[in-house]
Image (cartoon, rainbow, N blue to C red; front, side):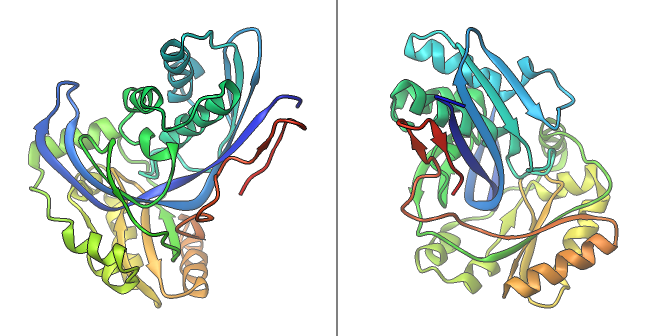
Length: 305
């Protein structure tokens, strides 16, 4: 594919998610979010075309025109004074309705690919503003590294050293509600969030045990209310050998377990699959100091990290 840009994007988990009752002018809740990238990835390919088109493999239930990828391409072209004449294809591996940020990851990856194609820095203020308009987590995926985000979970406040820990991701058979439904449930009965200072100190020190002891998500009760089986998965993971800590990520339904070893993560996932749950053994982090985007203008070839 001459002239194609290929970007591989990780998903994310929330080590801390603190949702407040206050909302901003957009109607978004104020959120404290500590996110780390996780090596379960989608691949986004962008190339020049007469008009904008977006394709997902496998196909999504919603029309391409209603996805974050489409919105990102339109808004970024508008912000840069360009026409969105590109074809975007997304190969999906990150599950939907999981709390892993799949749609945001795809939108962020599309923005980064378009920036490469159009000669713009991904962290250009105009680009970051577009990412925030597309969705709350999209800004994280412009440069996915461990970070504390404020605002609506879309304003980077600080970053942390790379964190590489074996992790098990497990999803229930039962489908949960949407992110919108989870926040509506939170508005009905949600508790105030806890603090994140101790977690940030543990991340600064790369102290995995202390990080595991300080996981927090006050949106998790809403996720359990909408999908009771997600609570079963979360509790089950906490009891597995070699699991340091487990928690529902984001608005659910996926739970993650930080593990002592790769073997512990693989064993938990193998047992989860025998129970009929979907599971992935992987790790947090990505290649520190290297861009997720590897593109050769001379050959038009991209490669994953």
